[in-house]
Length: 73
Length: 162
Picture (tube, rainbow over the protein chains, first blue to last red):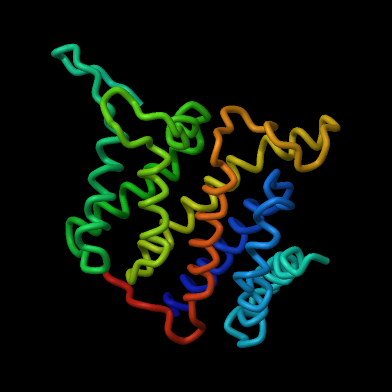
């Protein structure tokens, strides 16, 4: 139970950090956008939604939005 | 952050603690247990809280060596963050994720303000103190965060030590 809580907390925190690093970044067009594409961030975040391990809607929405940001849409 | 001792010497206390924590993760890696793990946790929480103070935050992200340390504090902070984001102990990873969040929030604040003031979106030099190589540093940290997210598995969520 505690581990599940920590897991959701970690995914939430890390995804929020990622969002803040990427959103409005002056390096988005020159470095970051191609980098996140190469890393496959969209798929990594998509997996978190698909495997059903994150159930909290607030976290799922954030993960979905960051995945969308990383897909270039 | 300099402090003066009774002998009048300037001592970089935060830098010294960061250096010690980096030594622990470099020498012991995943094996850091007991007192060393506790020092890692406390250091991560201390520097996370440091981002509440703009001066201390600026010091922590400084790329110029201080007169007491040849390694810039941002280099030490990055080494600590990157290693602890992938640590086997879930509590260390949690503290590290909070540090990553506080760093990103600190960097995001001037960007939001610039947009509010009508500056061009994504313009470089919006943040104070932005140094050469900032883009490469952001790429390094983003890569560590993404690896951290990737490794967090639904079932295999790692070890929790008390």
